[in-house]
Length: 252
Image 1 (cartoon, rainbow, N blue to C red):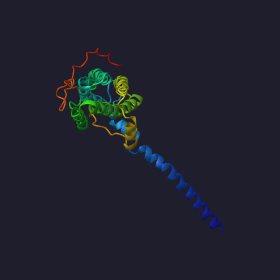
Image 2: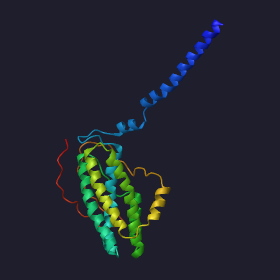
Image 3: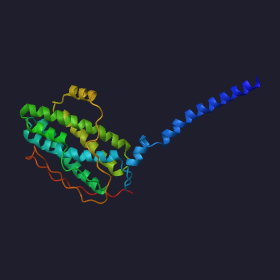
Image 4: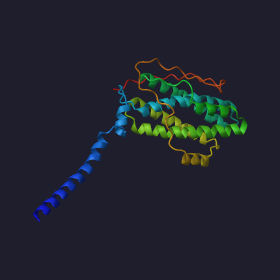
């Protein structure tokens, strides 16, 4: 009888030990394993004088540059082809806004030793081709909706970066991008041509957008990126020179 009691007690103790081990091990293995969100954040970030620069930060900088490479020529085109004042005004805002942002993003990239793209992405070139092939009211409809959809996607990225970046230069660039993109969204909607139902359907059926391309970690000092130049199919709309802007003092 006593042997049975000892054996029963041993089984109970063994069960408790096994249960405790099962509870503790997942916590230990989760914190220690690679591939968690915190682990990826730390492994993909690089140190700079302005704070850690994450992969998302670099992706954001790249996207700002890419936006200017095609939206600025698109704005110039709208200034000439628009048949209503609202469309021409939207074009003027795109030109002014992306001229400013292109100067800002090149300044930030230089200070962070990042390389920037010099050509729009394949999708952006396709949008430019679609706009270049349209005329009249069809052109205005395409201009308002293609540009509004693109700005909506960028606006979401700007908010994410502004909320989470640990880099002072990226934070300031996000502030500038937020103001500029919101202004462009408003003037595009002010044309009265934006299909809001279509935007909602697109948002409901498309998943989260992945990175277009990510700038590599800073390789070290690099030459200042040159001004963007337009690409086919918009050779008749050259990119205006970047605005001059006092260089901000280096953050401590």
